[in-house]
Image 1 (tube, one colour):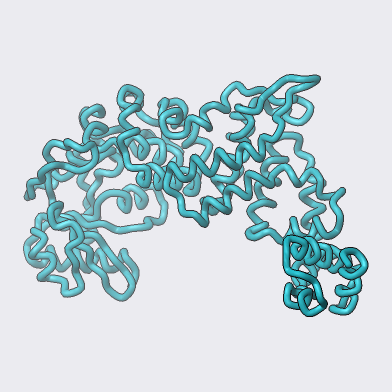
Image 2 (cartoon, helix red, strand yellow):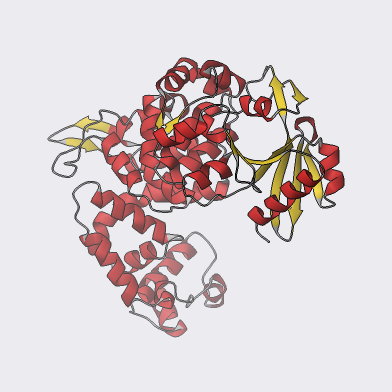
Length: 434
């Protein structure tokens, strides 16, 4: 059973008990746009205890807000009782709610008109109390009622507006945009995890460039990612970057993202974050050490946004290593193989491809890496070690810092096909370190 089938069954069961039950929110919006909904939610006048009694698999997940989660055969649907919300003292959740019997009251508390449509799954009737269908036709993101009030209730809605604009390709209605600009500093009060999740969606759900240009236009970008906003106006040497400044280059790159992982997307967004602080003009524009500076800055940004340690490590590596592609054809065989065998190298390769296509458009190094990966078997990139520390001790060497150099020298020779056995490895160590 899928979520849509379960939602229809829930709605029918509630209606058979004399209750109202409507599909609501994103699933209705997406169906009207010809998109495949990801989730299905139901809004009803049945109180939570009645919903729980009707569905044995139901679980109260937000008793105060009248939200019940119904699971069955791997599908799940949220069922929420009509409600009105009253006063948001924390800029996130209402201090009190009142259950309602009128679906109009439930709609008026929601964020944007396009998310406030209700659909009777049995008859196909659509309830539209706020002009949501017209805004879908006009491709507009519009706050319900007074936008300042809506964003004051939940500050995160200011990030949801550019997120929907990005993924749907819509514009943000002028009064809605003006309210976001007015209240933009309130986004600082939103938990870092919630900001992180909205940024993740903007970067991975399509239209990332539209999303970031909207964040910039709404003046939210300096509030949440000042290091990215600082890319504006940072000139680059035209012989390498005919497209323009660091901001334009980065926007072109994120525009090229296609179904990326969040680590790949953030690697692309942050790969040149070290350029603004390292900008200098000598005989030409230079950004000395910007990859290393950018890697350090990226760790700080990602920690601030509460990304996981594993994600931070992957993104740091993407930023730190992105300039090494220019040297791949001059690398020793051992250095090249170590470079190509990096964890998640496909993300490094895609970042480099986008970097080239968004600047000089020379893909020679990218194609060189592809050819090398095709020619070299995985076991040749990372062969089993010929020697271990125990082997060195058994051969009479004293444990110490030199062990690392010995083992590296052995692996270099192995990767370059100069040695092939334990005996040859021991001979090399005795010859060079004995």
